[in-house]
Image (cartoon, rainbow, N blue to C red; front, side, top):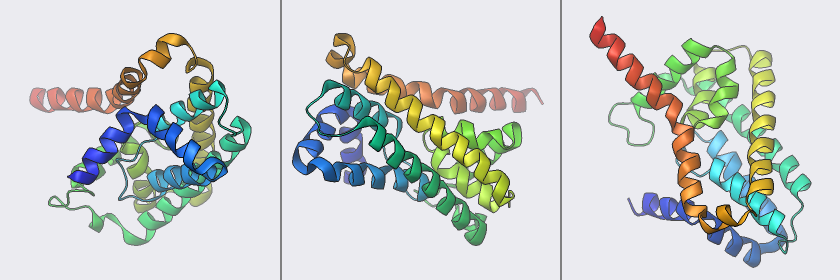
Length: 216
């Protein structure tokens, strides 16, 4: 519970926390951010790590100057982290299978697998790309793709397309919007807004599915 509270606090004040990390570790920040993105996309046990908000905040801080970080170097490193992370996650799913998801499991909930599998059923291979922009599902989706035995070369194509688009879009959004006074003054609310918009699709799908089941 304390870990979850710490992660939530880190996300809500991610601009200040990330600025502190950059000031403390400077160039090593590249590898810290690489590790976070790799873990969120590559380790199926880490679905609550920040992703969207971290990318947005990183872009905003670099645009503000005085970080010593290069936006292009960071983008390249994080694209590599996102693609390799998803590849590792896919391979774990392929070899471990669905048995790791259990109703009593508080991290790998069976509910996560069920919703993500339904997401795949609806969107097919494009789900790998779309899942990049949805928290939790982005962590579970590669594992489910592996469990479902999606052909590796086909999966890799969607993996690369999704990883590149996710990193570039979120970093660019932070870089070009994060220095605007309104965004700087309401960064915590902007972070919550990013999270809310990200989780809208699965919430809408769940509500729609519930009403469809009742109608049936």
